[in-house]
Image 1 (cartoon, rainbow, N blue to C red):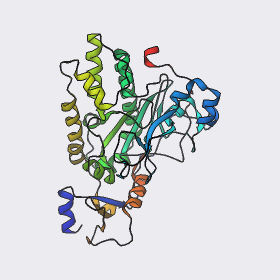
Image 2: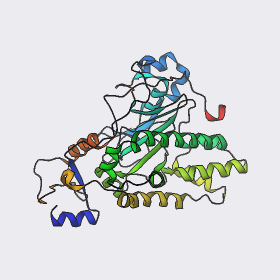
Image 3: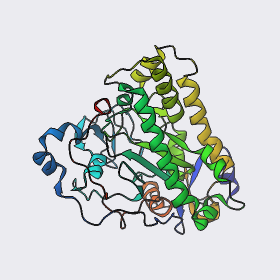
Image 4: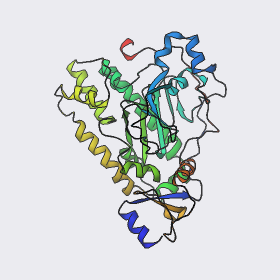
Length: 372
């Protein structure tokens, strides 16, 4: 690596790009079926189940650059960094509810890169891939459109979040930590202990979400190089939108003990303010978010970084200019976004070709938490 680039890496001003070999955690068989329970689209399913319409669509902004479905409150795409200020709100099919109902398609096949499934939980690789180990865990027996829905019944909400966390960790253990080649490629030797890795997990909810079914974001650092750049730019784990799991559980437990519940449509900032107004001892969003956010960078440094020799290029944070990693010279004709997409496929766990439908499809509509 050229000296000027080594300095830029040390100072956090550029990221690796253009991996020369695949470093994916290959998905191990863990259930799922090849045939959808409902052979039609989300629109077809709603036509057959009109009472489920409110559960089957999202309120979002869709990035015109990378087509990522983003929360309607975001000003910048958290997939590619494009400006969303002028993008109008729209309605998109709720992919995660499509998974739960076993619907065949929503403009694309609604198959999941499943890492664990039970009759009430589905854990799968997040197709947007922030890290090599990045899964989502959703309940399939109840519809909780946003994080605020948990607070309609705090005791049940807390139990549900603990169920999702336990399933997510079980999937990580069985699928990722048991993969010796992946562990060595990402973390080197000696490998970190499972306890160390569990403490490093980034877990939480986005409020509002991009998919209106509760999904626990659950990932292990290191972030993919391009996602590390977006994190440094403030586009991931955004304050007042990202709700760390420890804060969610502390708030729900304290409210349950106090006998307080509220069933209101609140975004992240509104929900945080509503909880804060209760004056709950030991429930501090600012401290929890700061600990989580800073912990991402600390884990990126402490647990492992991708080895530079595995990559051909570097991309500067300030202008997305692509440089040859060996010489430091400009890499003419090489596009940073194309490199990022290729690296996502080579480093991320999402298994598009082996994706499957859910084995325990649910009838519609699902009950709400407050209806259980």
